[in-house]
Image 1: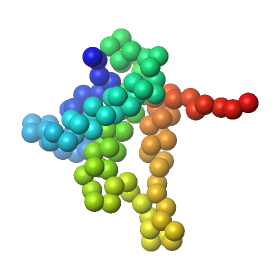
Image 2 (image 1 turned 180 degrees about the vertical axis):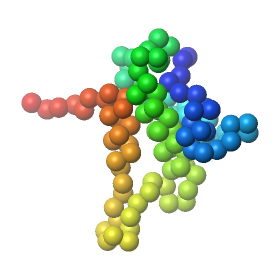
Image 3 (image 1 turned 60 degrees about the vertical axis):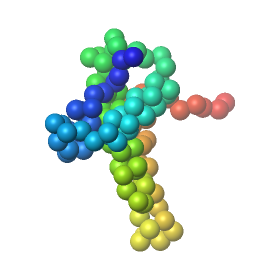
Image 4 (image 1 turned 45 degrees about the vertical axis):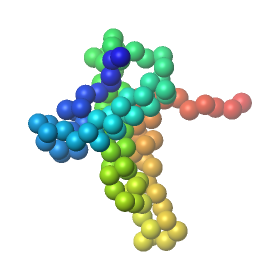
Length: 107
């Protein structure tokens, strides 16, 4: 199965050394690739990677988000000091935008 992004791309994005990869980054990349394939089953990474660098970038960002979420005690970054507990989901929605996901619309 072709993948949208490589482990080295995610490690560079996270600022981690590429010579001794963390297995958790590989797991996060697997999830991000599967997430993208689920959202965009119409795309084939084996033939479309060169023409869709935005999708590849979205997968790299999503893998970074998943890795950070799994590697921190608090999970997704939030802003509880602002009152009420606000969770920043803008990076997630940016990934959806990068992969070209069209939200279902009613009506």
